[in-house]
Amino acid sequence: MKSYRYFLIVILLVLSCNFSFGQSRIFPGLVFGSEIETAGITFGGEFFVSKKVSISPDFIFYFANKESRVSGGNKVETKTNLWELNGNVHYYFVDNSNIAFYGLGGLNYSHVGYEYKRTDVDSGVIESQFDGSDGEIGLNFGVGANFPVRRNFTPYAELKYVAASTDQLVIGAGLKFKLR
Image (cartoon, rainbow, N blue to C red; front, side, top):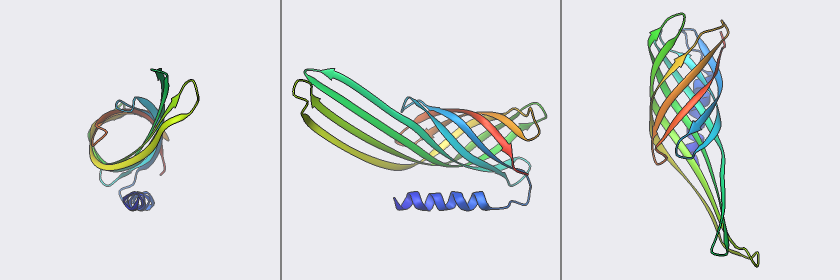
């Protein structure tokens, strides 16, 4: 829990910084995680420190993945929750008026929660039940593209691999809104 608080403080400090180079953006978006096999929402910022380099912190919350099955007279229900805090650096290697491609790398903190319940179908008695959670720091590697269609907002798409206990491919898309 302490590492979550420290990471959140760092992201808030980065979001409140006024980088002298200029352009800053905020972005909401939708994502899909290959390991958790569910969609989620993301919100973050992008702050340019030079013409080709930006710092981009973000938060991703995946919708709960619920499963239920009946076997051998028992009903088994599971629920998995996952959220991520990311601190990435983007390097723009192509940036023109029609499209901008970038590579990304950075740190990831993933937190997963798990609930399990097994119930006897005939009696309705809960035979076993437990829950737990875990967090781990990992690395992000990926690519992205911005599609400048308007002056104040830009659609984007991103593909990244999270190397941690989750080891998942994350596909995302959304809009980047210019702050100044």
